[in-house]
Amino acid sequence: MNTFHTTFSRTLTSSDIKQNIPFPFTVPAGTTQINIRLSFSPWIVDNRYNMLTLSVFDPDGWRGAGHRHGATHEVFINAHSATPGYRAGEIQAGEWRVVVDTHMIMPGVSLPIQIDVTGTDDAIAAAPTVHTVGKTASRGRGWYRGDLHAHTIHSDAAWDIPALLEWARNNQLDFCTLSDHNSVAGLAIMDAASSDELLTIGGLELTTFWGHALALGLRQWIDWRVRPPEHPLGGRTMNEIASEVQAHGGLFIIAHPRSVGDPDCTGCRWVYETMMPGNARAVEVWNEPWLNESDHNEEALQLAFDWLNQGYRLALTSGTDNHGRAAHDEGEPYGFDVVYAEDLSEREILRAVQRGRLYLSSGPRLELTASANGAHAMMGDVLNVKQNAPIQINAQWDAAPDQSQFTLIVDGAPREIWNTGPSGAQTLQLIGGQDHWCLITLRASNGEMLALTNPIFLDGH
Image 1 (tube, rainbow, N blue to C red):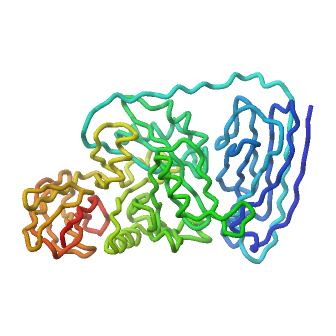
Image 2: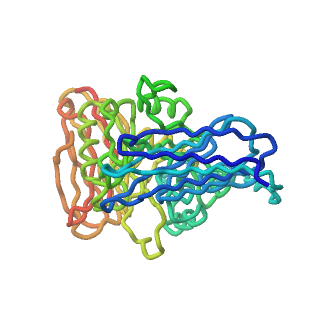
Image 3: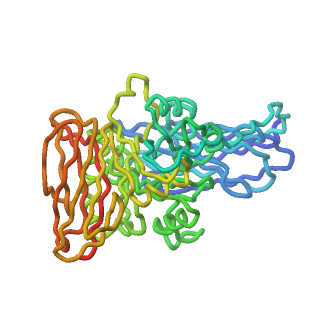
């Protein structure tokens, strides 16, 4: 028996792009399940997609998001289960809202949409699934290899959480992160899968209209919607969102900042003028395989160099941005994060990343240290240097392919270049007071990045 049925119809145009359009409805007492269906046409215009997604709010707040493609979105929510991306739980009586997030509406066409909302009072027979948080045994201080950026069916990926974790184990990762688009609905399953074999890390990707950012180490939903000051709900800036993530103890990372943007990858390019980098202190410079043309990793790295030269002390990260890979793709040269942490735990991994104590690599080991005046530093550290004092830069590597090239980058420019064997060490010299930061890159003969250290900062100049 239906307890209610509501239909909303509206025609959108390109003037409605980058909006969060609410459609409120009232849920009567006794409702056990809500069903929502969004349909619109056309989906594809000039080989590009109109992209509308759904967010749902109950009287207490966020209830889920379905950030996925398609001209039809169907959602159900009841006490025991829900469409991936949405949270199961009791259906409260009162005002609910379904919000249409208009990420892309192509110009030149009208876009009629229809939303059907149905509530039922049928008995829900299935018992709720109880997820117990898994445990990862302490391993102590050391190097840990993993991924900080991946998606599942809880947003727009092709695989579920078990498949993501199987992929992580097949790649011999120590940790794996779930960062679905604007949703934390999958984190209970992710947390339950943490084991001695593989640490799982939670978070979400704040998938805004003008750029994406990872908010890692969090379990609560973060409102990603940037709003102008005159908005009825009040203004909200990206700087404020980053501060909120940090206030909750999360790690905020600007994701793929030089990816192609509208209309090919809607909102993927970072265009926040006051967040270049603003209060962000980490940036993803390696997204998917290095030579993936759509992500413009080389441009992202140069942008990070520019920010470093402006005096920002940033951590550089990588992320596979994995949306579901077939088995034959497991040999793809993804850049993983190799982190020197006090322990294999979410807190310590993210703390070490925030400090820049990591290098990025598709396979080779590449470590960077420096010393001067009896002081020592590793990646992410500040080395206090006296004016004109000699600085010793030490690079160590292993498993480097033949004919690969090492480069010492100082203040964004190549300073020393060398070719050598697959394993070894190199000592280089700098002079105190002349330079601000340095790092090492390892590239294949075709220019593809194989490994990249985080910078060491040279103070006292």
